Length: 285
Length: 156
Image (cartoon, rainbow over all chains, first blue to last red; front, side, top):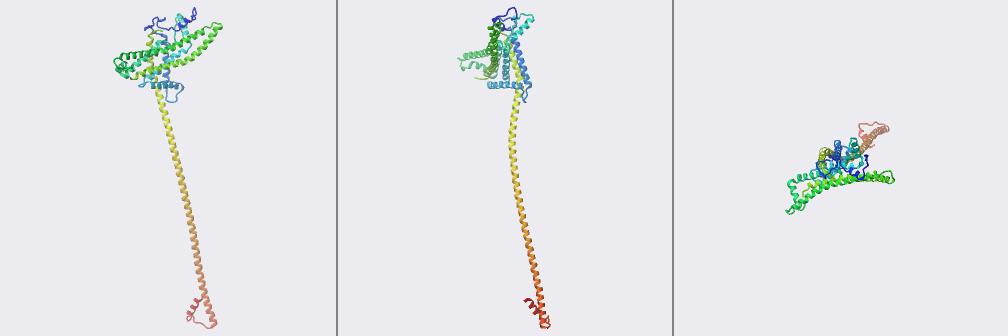
């Protein structure tokens, strides 16, 4: 905004919603498998490493003696995840329970990026961009990885792969194929195609809704933070614009507090659904 | 919204993070939790054991105390009996000694009075003979009249 002209509201939003990708400009095609979102990758990997660092530190210091506050907090988290996993997945949980913990903590961290001021990191990025002699208008930066459909669908696709893996592991390849054609309606040649179609719809809808739910919540949350940011930016010195600024502060506080619930809840929902879907893969019909 | 290769990158990162958690985070924390749970269970069991031990010890102590009290009472009553017996014996012994002394004294007194009587009789007989001699002015043959004198002595 420091450039020749201040962007209007629509330009501001579009700029904020454009990813920093490997093309350097907005991706034209809806689907293009040669492009990477560098900002999503950077923030998700960084937050993943931060998570791993924190958890590994807790694991390294874990003792069976009297726990400190940090250890107790991590233990509460681990025990909570373990009890959920135990009640949902009946079988070997050596990978599934840690997976659920990873899902919860990682998504929570990525969602929590939403609580940073909406302009803070993009503006710093713009500054760095202009210092290095580039046009700050093309300095795109989105800091909430879960507000990128690629990230959430990537994770839900991972869950789908794990569902398929556990289905085959528990039921055997033949058993799984058998189930594809005989569940949910029963074993009859006439029902085979219907069953198969239902199973395919179930897999696809599970995976898509799993990723879309998290993406939609975080995307909408981010968008509202931008609108609130616009409200605050409306201050030009007049009384009515001052009121808008006060409204922006007020709305920002309310929405941020509400968002504490949203980011935790969405992380929890994603974890629970991961457990439920993998739990379903363990059940034979 | 655009879909692109970020999706697969995210998938791979996701699985790597989950693997890392499974390998390095989960086991030590669960191990610590399990160890602490077993420690607490051991502690509770030890507390239970200590409680039953304590009640056993209390019961034993009260038993011992009761036994000691009983034996003390028995001892005391035995001692009292013995003392009473000793007093009784001493009293009987005393009475016996007193009786014996009295009997001895009585016997001695009897003998003495008999002896005095004998002596007196002798004297009387002598006096009577002397009196009779004086009266008769005539010597009496002691041998001839011994029978008479003896008869006289016994009559006195």
